[in-house]
Image (spheres, rainbow, N blue to C red):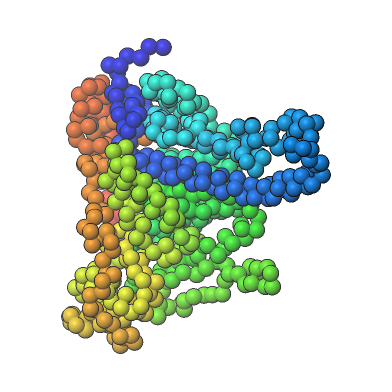
Length: 589
């Protein structure tokens, strides 16, 4: 079938090019370049780590094999009877056919006498491919990658993907295959077949998690995106609980909590099949969260899951929050005994302001990143900056992630603390110095430029703020406000605001950009594929895009105007009915 290029726009990203129809037939979002670049960087690291792990296993197996061969060789040498030249001719002939010399001549075998195989190229599944741009970039840009299987349940998307595969030449044709099928069915019918599974749905990934967990090989990589941030960040807590099994809280740390809710949900699905996850990187970028986890199978290791989950108590009056672990473990002889956690960790009323607590969770409270992975990915990205279209953004995110405290879930906002007390804010460096001088750790967070992760208890944090207010007096607040209750108590810790050398991170000291503005207007979510672009979508794609589309398709502009007229007709109210309604309202009142 011939393609009329006049109906398409050629979009180039990285080394891949795709044909996009001028109508909104197949979903494409330019803003997801950050997502695709980050995924490519993590995939490159995964292939490297996988090769290292394979070599380590091979060398471990080689040690006992080499000992057995040496033992057999020494036994054979004792049994041999040497002739004048040191060996019998008959023995020499037999050895040349079946003995150790034949093994040494076999190039497929090592000196230890066994074949050292290279790991197979990783097989990748892109469960929701749309235009196929992500799969094409994987195939064309990542060295050592195997087959890339692109799935979609929309026929127009599959046709577009197949068209783009041909458009990208022989490399794409040989490595990428596209299928029209339900991703859940395909993953369920191919258990433990894919080394990498990529989930990037339009909205929530919750319906795909169960089948995705089953299709990943042991030690494989699962990459998952969630764009339903309104649900994950507490806008609809009951919906979040129904989809992810956790209740979110509306707080300054809600975006990090969204990451931890998603990780807890993936772990829950994995545990049903005696599997567990190890996060290597978890990021919140633009309008979504993205997690990269490795999946392993172990019934014994799975028992540690309750130790990695916690409930969150958030005070409704101040910024104080506390974590309640789900479980605990006790060593018993040579085994471990698992028990429910001891609680509650807080009283019914907040110790600081006297208000009640909201409880959310459970969330993933173990580390969200692997420091070794993050550092290695960042170095790799810097060494190949020309190959990443969104290099500035992903390097900024990775730099900030590399400086986070891994063992501290959630964070505080300095501005929120000051808003509670209604005082002026100290500089971030001064606040950090006070925490470090009190012998606690503190770092920033990639989620919020004003966020601060610290292992200091809330008693120390509020003491620091009390001492700050003493040095910078404020107008006495109303006695019933949380801030006045906090300030009415005397500080129990000595606070030192002198500048500490560790108050600035290495990136801050070098003035490395960590939080970049959006590269263009309307950098965010886009219309779902197949929806008609009208004047109502200005907030999503902008005036220029809407006007340009309607000028190219005047029939849609006419339909849009007719629809607006119908809406106006429906809004018009019959005067007699309006009068009757008014009389009824007045009579009831």
